[in-house]
Every structure is written in C-alpha cells, then in structure tokens.
Image 1: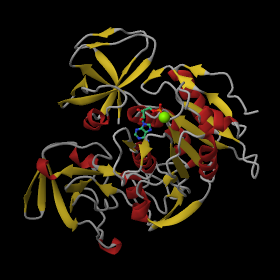
Image 2: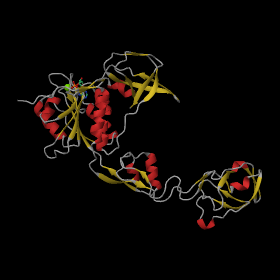
Image 3: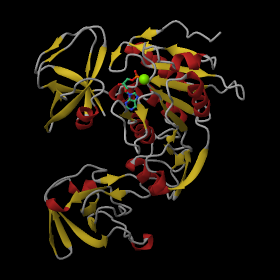
Image 4: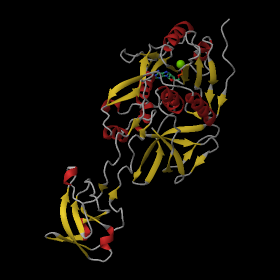
Length: 417
Ligand code: AMP
Ligand code: MG
C-alpha cells in the first residue's frame, strides 16, 4: 500500500518562519575553499580575519593644518614657530619633535609628531615665513586619531559567517589578506513538476506552459549563495517523480515546484512520504504561497545528516515568494551565513488596498519616492501567476491577516526584493 501523507499542518506565517529559523540554526556548511580576495566578494567568510598591526599604526592627523601643543593656545591669537613639514608617508627618522612654542605643518594621514597633542585646522591659521598665527584653541587630542584606537594588533576584525561585502573586503585588504578562506557553496537541486510544463527551448503546445520556475529559483539560489543543480521536468506521475526526487537528494537541499495543492495530480507530498520524509509544515496562512511544504529526509547513507526539502507552489509568484520567506534561511545556513532576521522597511501607501482577511499577504509592489519620503503601491498584478507584473515590482507590501482595508497614506511594512 502506498504511504499516506501525514495530516496537514498549516501554520501562521510567523510560526512557519520560526520553524525554518530553528532548523536553519542547526545546520552547518559542508566545506571551505581558498579564494583570491576579490573572488571572495559576496561569499561567506570561513575564518577569522585579525589585525596584523595597530589601526591606525601611528597617531594619525585627521586634518591638514599644524601639529601643536594644546597648552600653547591658552591665549589667542597664538604665534608659534614652524619647525618642519610632516606629509603622509614621511620616514620615521624625518619626523621632528615639537616643543613648547613650536608647531609643524601636517597633512591628513601623516603621523602626529612627538611632543604635539593636537592638530589645528589650516582654516584657523595664517602663516608668515616660519611663524604661524593661530586664531582658535584646540583640546588635547583634537584631530588626531590615537594609535590603535580603531583596532589593536591581534584583534578579530571579521568573523566566520559574515557575507563579504565591500566593507569587509576593505578590512581584509587593510590587513594584507590577498586570499581568504570562504565556505563552499551548497548545491541546491531544483525540480519543477507538472504535465503541462515544458522546457524553454521547445515550442510549447497550445495548453503547455514553459518552465520558468526552475530558472527563477536558480537565480534566487545563486543570489543567496548556492549552486543550483537543474533537474529535468517531472511529470505528474509517481514513478518518474520518485526517480527525480531521488536524484535531487544527491544535492545538499532539494526545491520542488508545483504539485503541492489539493488537486488529484498533486503528488509531491505523497511521493515524499514514500521517502519517510518528516514534514514540518504542509501549508502556511499566506498569499501567495499557501500550499508551501517544508520537511526533511534522513538518507540511509547518512542518517545523521538530514536533507531538507521544500515543496513550493507552482504558481510562479508563489514560488518566488515562498523561496524568499522560507527556503532562503535554510540555504543561507548551509552556505555558512550567520542567521539573520527578515528586515522590513516602512513606506507610505500611495493608493488604498482592499483585501480579504485570513491570510498574511506579500503582494508585489513598487517602492518609489524622493529622499526620505518612500511611497509604495501595489503592482497591477492579476494574481500569483502574473510574472510580468512581478518583474516590474521591486518589493512586497506585507498585509496582516486581520486587515480588510488599508487607507492611502498609512505606513505599511515592505519587504525588499
Ligand atoms: P501547481 O502548483 O502544480 O498546481 O501549479 C500552479 C500553476 O503554476 C499552474 O498554472 C501551473 O501551470 C503553473 N506552473 C507550475 N509549474 C510551473 C513552472 N515550472 N513554470 C511555470 N509555471 C508553472
Ligand atoms: Mg501542477
């Protein structure tokens, strides 16, 4: 007798998301690789990066002006004797010592000389031959960044699990790291299902639909730090579907699309049940994406290392949204990224929204506006199949399940795409 799917577990959005986050927190990345610095941009750091010297390595002038002793400026204007010039990169042996009544010309980025304890900006000075007249007092330490104040030699500057953005790349460069250890990208199998779904390079028959989900998902997987592994389209027929799911479990994670609704030919849950799958949920109270399925199997070859899967609804926008809301945290965890929460922005609604209660909605929308005045409006979409309208959107407006009407001018939560 064929195995029967477990009873449906439909969660609220928050419950489903928390469950995904809990599972993600248990996952570890699988491997590491050493890359040249720039190839590491966008990847997840797999080793600590430490300061190889103090930052700054010397007390650094933050302005162009004169290095002085603050005590010499008790009475203004003060006249000080200029004893030399200190430019950025000056040899240590050439740095003069400033004593009482003296000043040295100094440039931004140059080492503050011994004896001086502040820099007066050039704007507050006038110079005649080797005498500078200073019109403004400074406090001790003004315009000098103390040695080691940004970081001490040996201090950890970057932590494993960080995504290497341009600022992190800058830090790595500043400590002389031309190579970095990053986590290997997890392989994510993508399996689209449906008798009507055909490859994009064959002409579709009148009732056939080109397979767009495999490609939207592959692009999302790449953007999230994974390596997509594209499987052939599965028909709505259990034997071939089972074979392809088995191939999919060769990867670190499996994403299926389609076949998770209530129709007679929606076989994905049933076939996954035959793999002794454990289902965490079989639906979420969201729109689009209500039939989303999340679970895992324990492979016979490595029972302690479960493989996670998602059955994403086949409607193209549902597929995209449910990937972002639920599949992404699992993929990011396998990629080695430290866990992070979903971040919502707020924007003023441009046009009233009327909807039905009961589901939390993530509706494709267009965020615009000038400077701090963000405005958002719904994309003119025809439902979860409307890829064209979604492609023109740049975010989702989030509507709580208890709201029927949201007036123009209200602040609404927005999830960036
Ligand atoms: P399903 O979730 O299988 O009931 O499919 C829901 C809708 O999404 C149907 O209109 C399908 O034709 C469409 N669909 C399913 N899979 C894909 C796919 N891979 N690419 C584009 N559309 C799809
Ligand atoms: Mg289908």
